[in-house]
Image 1: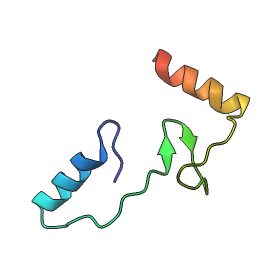
Image 2 (image 1 turned 90 degrees about the vertical axis):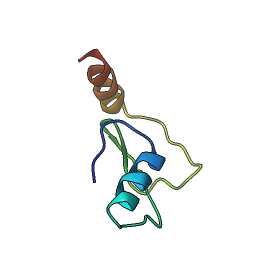
Image 3 (image 1 turned 180 degrees about the horizontal axis):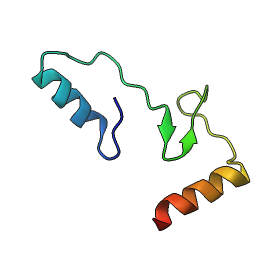
Length: 60
């Protein structure tokens, strides 16, 4: 499922409404930045390409 806006509770409510309760949700991407194997609570330095993609995505 791909959401362009919203929070985890929205996904949970939508799926619960159609009879599919959610056990676990995992964010795999933030805008154009793919998180890969980045673990919860960890961070990494963005590449210059990622910074450019983020800037481009907010200008649209």
